[in-house]
Image (cartoon, rainbow, N blue to C red):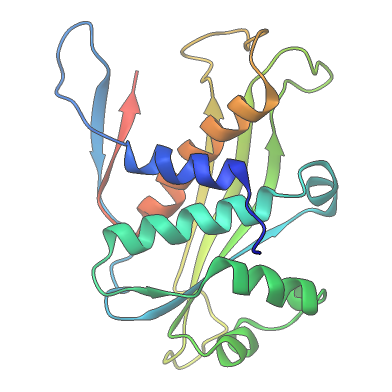
Length: 208
């Protein structure tokens, strides 16, 4: 029976619940953000996530959570995009532990895709540095796109930095004390997914 990850299931529900509301006093306000890359429609796509070894040890499901959540957001929002099953990509990474050392064109060939999306995670935490009792999630990384048909498929077609906090310092200067690591991680991954996946489609983000 396939392994079930509760956080991945919660993320799927959370992504489906993303909604926008008008700028009404007393309610949350959203801003519309345009897509930065619009050539995934009708293409086969692999979304792969790399993380620092420390992150892998501290948060062993981080790569799989982000890979799955971003892949689902692309399938939901980009018409005709055919995304490789994230579980197959996790297995590929496990079978090829040196995959981060090969060229993007090699991965494109091995995975048989038109577009390779690499998400490099530099920071991933659920609490303030040096204070594990004060909870504030942070994910920082970059989204890169490589195109199979490019004259040089090893050259990035796009590279976008993405960084999120939950809760944001504009919401509370001090992190939360009574939240669980899982709830903070869920909310932070949801925010990161909206922005990382949103590189490929118009979306709305909460503004202060």
